[in-house]
Length: 489
Image (tube, rainbow, N blue to C red; front, side):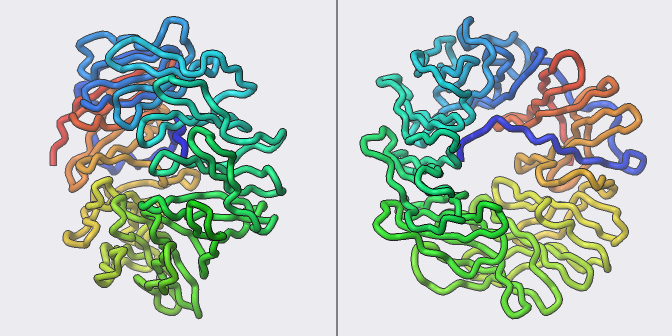
């Protein structure tokens, strides 16, 4: 899916009168920049610098020893979206005139890639092919490709239909093809395939789908031979899942039975929950052959398998199973070679895991972080456990107060060693950033004391150092900080 510069504003509220956290920061905070608006930031590969957009594009060192360096041209103001190429050698960005530029982040030399192009609408999404040779960008109605070396002008990949915006856009793993959803010939969206350079016309891969179905989510198989896609009714009430060869030599094949949420970890299998004869079954189904589904786990009568996620490496399914007024957390290997493992359970009535929809799996696929109610009295805990059940659950923070108007879907970040989360001091209306070791320890406050009515907004770990970078909003300017933090386990 094309990348977007989107930051979720989701807050974790903690009852400060019961949680033992520090009121002032233990981190060494350095202000890197302030500007009327800082759109976003990304780290350089060495983890010691970051690139950020604040009108122009800048490079800053995390230790703050040197002032930020402008790396975009003087006439290229109001830069919003930018991203690194997959090889991290260059940066692609879009300016206010919807011109696409590429620059070396080590030098302030920018090359325009579409200088003579006038777009009727703004560029809404942009991505770079996996081989770092082409840039794909789109408006609501038009889709373009341009070589990253500027050797030729942009080429339009689709056949726009006035009033009909294009849907999702995907790049094939081999960087040769683009798939996009569009309603060019019927009321609903079909799936089209076009070469990256439009050396041939787009091909409709989904001719024959019922007119009420629109193509939505698309996933490629690792060998680039098959695709799996979801087709939804226009009202969005029901959906079906199909698989087919990428070359279009066969018609889409509907995969049945699918009753609830679908996750495709690597393009070869679908993990789904099937309700069959009053029993919920967690199943793995192949999308490349007709082999029968494999049941990884199933519920007892009167209980349900509720939510599940796939580990980033695609080896585990983590899910919560609800029964007897409590919800327990399990994991099972995707290959089905071992029985499911109870990660956290034996909760009292009305207690348990607060829906694994709110949980996180670390990027190394070793640890699971989630919210639990261990007493059944709406006294919530931030909890961590090994994904294979080899260790007991660790209570990281045991007095979390949950506001009914807030979600925990994206409330935390982890670098496989620590967790970042925000808490609110309601007395002065301030939202601070806190961190805690993933395997247990004392939470520490990351930012310095903030003035009333201000809040930490964007935040992330630097990939290869102990720095954390965050922005503060609420004043006249957005402020950009780095923090060097001495976490203690």
